[in-house]
Amino acid sequence: MRTITERTALVATTAVAILALTACGADVGSGASATPTQGAVGPPSTSQFSPTPRPTNPDRSGDLQAAAAADDATRVRDLIRRGAVIEARDAQGRTPLVTATKNRAVESARALIEAGADVNSKDDLQDSAYLYAGAEGYDQILRMTLDHGADLASVNRFGGTALIPAAEHGSVSTVRMLIDAGVDVNHVNTPGWTALQEAVVYGDGSQRYLDTVTALLEAGADPNIRDAAGRTALENAERVGQSSMAATLRGHRPN
Image (cartoon, rainbow, N blue to C red; front, side, top):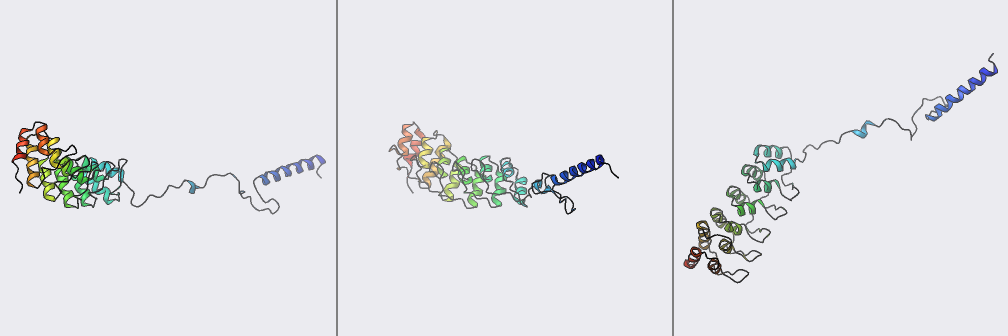
């Protein structure tokens, strides 16, 4: 027989065991195996850390912008094939085609245009591939934009067509290309200049500007349109001392 001391120790041991099982949420009375309670803290479910599935065609527009700027046409085509968004914009609102154009990346621009890039999409500065190529005299890219739906009536942030800055820069081949495409030679921009006026006012009277003015006059540019100050192209040429330019303007006979 157990002594009183032994029985007391046994009862105490049993009580401790019951308390421990109760703390773990076990059903002591039924003898069922212990299961975690609703609020129990245990190891996290592996599903909590499962990686987010990648889309089948991830947007690689950042990579496409970089490839366009670097004129890496092979990578441009590869990224497009893998699902890069061709019209995605960067922080300045530039599409990859605008980025390519502003970096004079001819082959990247070609790859993008052939893939369907919009030649008229504008960035935050209101530059499109067409407008910027025309303004800067990037004739290879300009030719591609003209062949793929360039909006000849679209204007830049100064309210001018591509022809006006082309004339300002004395880009004779670009001016002729835009004239042949059908751009309005007498369009007046927001500051009040036509292409003819800008070729005089911002030009230096050198041969390339004389050729630019001649091309514009032969295409029907009106030398009598006055600027915001009320002056004609001839009056401006005389005012800035461009004698050869003034002679060219005086000698013009409308067709």
